[in-house]
Every structure is written in structure tokens, then in C-alpha cells.
Image (cartoon, rainbow, N blue to C red; front, side, top):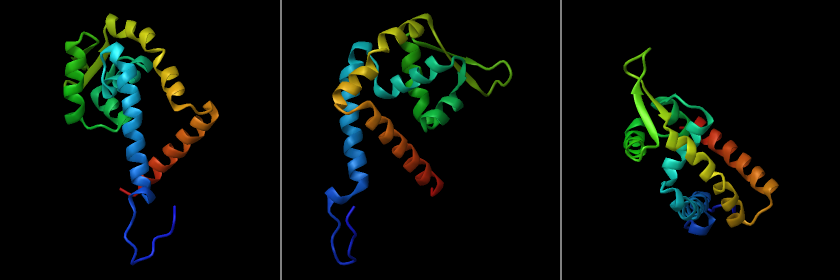
Length: 149
């Protein structure tokens, strides 16, 4: 990024935040198209990814994994439950905790979702190694930014 002189007005195309924001928008468009066949939104897909990794996860654990608060996550989970993909129950150990599990339909969707990542790789038209390196850089940046908030 070019250095900024104190009297120079910042330019949009020189902003890292705008590059990240506009790339995120483009990525979401790709996912929206690919997820249409599953009738999932991108945030719903992220929740399903967490549950396909491990079932019986508390709402707070899902929120921590996805960097979402419960006020954002709860309506999302309600829609997934209404679609018959997840079930929410109170924890037997702690009534304050809600545990989210996949239904049979939610488990079955995992196979249907297997092609999503391949579609994203095709849309990105980058070498897989380049995408892995970019992902690692973004995760490092996210960690540094989180340390400063």
C-alpha cells in the first residue's frame, strides 16, 4: 500500500479495508449462487459446516467459531430448525445452554454440499496453493486485528 501523506486525501482503491470488503461481497455472490440448490444462505451454510464437523454443539460454541453473537445466531438457528435441518434442545447439564444437533435431513445435506468448495475453487480461478497461502494470511491478519480490539 502506498504511504499516505498527511495532506493527501485517502483514495478508495488504496484502502485495504475496501479490498477486503469488496472481495467479501464477490465471494458471497459466488456462495449465494452455489448454495441456492441447497436453499441455504451463507451464514446458514457456515453453521452447517460447524455441525458437520461436530454435532451437539452449544449455541455459544457455534457463535465463538463463527465470530457471531447469540442475537445474530438465534434467528439463523430458528430458520434452520424450521427447515428441518437442526434441532435445538436445552442442555441436561446446564439449562441455560442450548445445544444444536443435526437432524437426519441435516446430515444428508452434507453429501449435497460436498461440491460447494469445488465450485468456489473454480470461481476463484487460482492455484489451490495460492488460496491456502491467502487464507493463512487473512487468518493471521484477523488475529492481529482481534488483538487490537
